[in-house]
Structure formats: C-alpha cells, structure tokens
Image 1 (tube, rainbow, N blue to C red):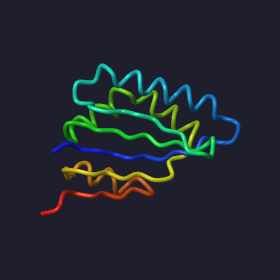
Image 2 (cartoon, helix red, strand yellow):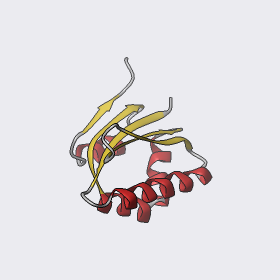
Image 3 (cartoon, one colour):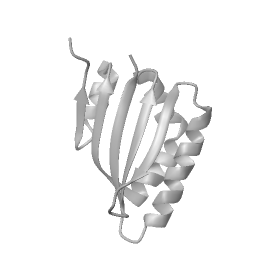
Image 4 (cartoon, helix red, strand yellow):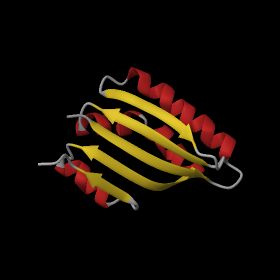
Length: 112
C-alpha cells in the first residue's frame, strides 16, 4: 500500500512569491525520486494558502524525499507555516514517531 500525505501551508506575510518559488522547486526536485509517485501543489481561494498532495511507494520513500529535499523543505518552512498534515496508508513506527512530533498532524492507517 502506498503512503499519501496532504499538507497545508500558509505563506508568511509578505513571502508568498518566495513560497511559490520554493514549492515549485520542491515539485521539480521530486521528479527524480524513484519512490515518489505524486507531488502536486494546489492553491486555495486565499492566495496565501496552499496544499501539497504527496504519494510515495512507502514510508521509507517519504523519508528519502525528506532527506533528498532537506534544504528546500527548510526553505519552505522559513517562508510558510505548516497548518495541517494528514498521512494515509501504512504508517511505519518511524513515520508514526515523526507524526507525533509535528503539530497538527494526524495519521490514518488502513482499515483492519
């Protein structure tokens, strides 16, 4: 089963254009990641609110993405605030621990 995440960000005041550039750079960087199946950004009616939908082959691929894009992710967090995160799929113990340390994060494992 794949792992899907839905992450909401709000660009910090006066940083919207920089945030958009960071989001586009993140999307471009994922094209070469073998475990990344989807990485799509969306904008809300509020021009400072964004959502990224990510899909990975598994939790290990999500961590590989975080490692590969570490500098770009740090930049995104400088320019925007994570307001919510949902993780859907097989949640490894490592991913569960990660989620517990991220404010506003919920995990949704498959039905048993």
